[in-house]
Image (cartoon, rainbow over all chains, first blue to last red; front, side, top):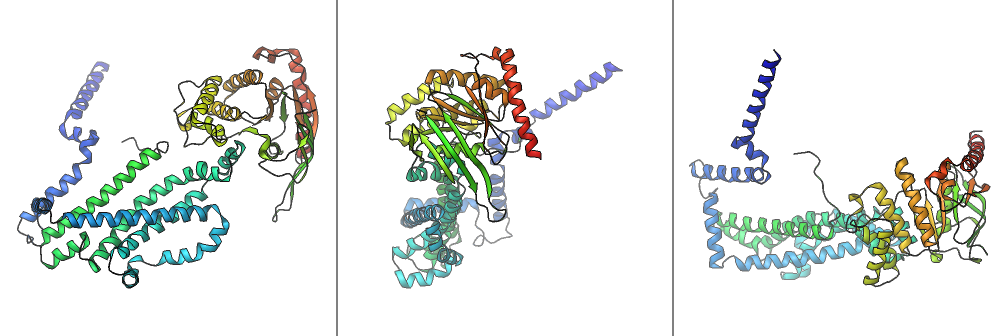
Length: 282
Length: 258
């Protein structure tokens, strides 16, 4: 009886071992493989739908066609000036906005005086949907680069501002006392304790802000520009070049993705100590 | 002349809702140079407040603190503090934490590295220089906190229940190490604790505090030979002192209940 039981157990163990070797299982245990399952699946599905004849190609071009269009646009150089100008506007605008946001955020978080003076105007302005300001900004700053850079800077400014304030205010008073007992003066406490504490929050706001900044950039370029990816997308749509529309969307999404990666890389460099940990075992 | 003299120190926390809370009701204590003094008191009696006032992190309501005979109630007298919760900077490595004080004083990077290395060896943390606080154990964190305070070359080292969070065995090891460091560095140490055994084992004298509002109830001389090893704990002399101090503490616990 015991022997029989043991035999069954061994048999079960063998089956389990075999299961582990099945390709499907390998799929789910290898993290690199399981990460690309859904993106590849979606693209294949899209390709099938586009070729099924149920949807007209000018409504939903197949991924392969979009890829070909995109490569042609890049090789011919038609898209490059648009990418360049959008890249510049977003980088300069976001950098200016976030730097100002960090500076004012530290001021508000650090000093009650600064907070009391600027808090209400800042909160009121923050509540305004930034896209609603586009017509006004164009009148004030013209159709040139200044208005676009300003519009891109706005969300960067408010996002980093709010997170910097929260970050600065979350400083542990014990850390400040420890630093003071080690001889740190106010300015040193700001640089060596307050800013390191706020840094994770500031980086989080970069990741959120850059996405919203790109939204503003595209809208502004669609409304009032004759260069840039927003202009390119709208122009292609007017000429019914839906594959070009998709190519433009692909490029702008890719830019957003690259920006996010750059922020993550910076986070790794500056916040090596602040590691995110996985909660579940999988 | 005393290294540190505390005269009639009073601290009242103003609280509009619950009325004023009197924490320290006239603390008198004089500490000699290179002395190791244990301050023993029940939880919540104001020990931490006392240390923070001595360090200049809190202002007293009244009273004086004389440092080497001079009235100097500021941070300039350079008190190193070892906090109960370690209070290490999580964004700095072990050596970064230890270098913090010298860095604030504008000491060059090269010299800072040497200082850090010296104290890392003193507390036995070789090989952990580049670890972050969350990557090391509680006992190691406490050693980093001690090294960080010492690296700033303080005139007085204030320790606020530094071993409260470690287990009993490790606690005895850390006490032994602390005594070794104290003898080597020749520092004046104020060591706050609620543990009677610890207060006697470490101190030249044990200052027993009353319940809140706190005063110094009695200062007990500890005439046990140095250097002290763990065996001293089974010495009859140690028992006698422990019994005596314990009765003082009981009196306070009872008066607190009444």
